[in-house]
Image: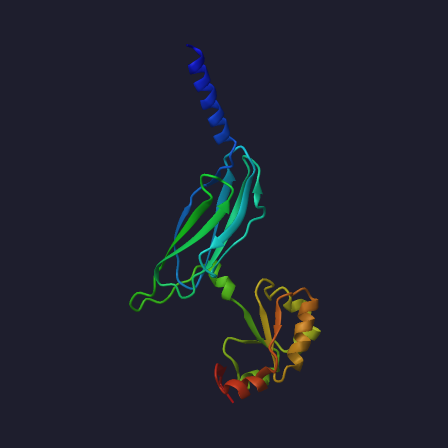
Length: 235
């Protein structure tokens, strides 16, 4: 009579062992809520883990739209291991509440498709309140516009926001300028026709400024293309 309970315990233990032997996909938080001004990037990282006792194989990660990207360093997780799933969402054109989802496909028999949700609140401008930008985001828009013509040419007309550093300054006094110019933002150089700016750009590039941009055609091509648009004291 005692054999039946023992047999039942053996069956239960066997079933429990089978369940524990499966891979189990988990995520710290499957829902991410964010409020952000439309036009900026959302960057967030989900942490995926294998809470089971067998190898977890992630077969695919499928975002809900082209504006969302997600990549994994590895698609196979041993028991107890984790992997970061970074996502980037471009909110250009968003307005109000926007939902984005990412489906993670794996060999977890209980949750073969794990759905991650990003709830986005992208408020538009209210009334006449000007738009705002965080300091960390503003740096991505920042650049230095440099007119490498002579001071006389600069005074006769130049692009709004540009500063005047003649190419001769880079040729003769480079050491005086290198500490003053930032290396972490683009330096956009222009002249009258494009020759002097090309020379100055090469000098700065050789001095360690990797983010140097030469505006092809210079002021001559600008005037032909845009007239007096964005010119200070135009011709």
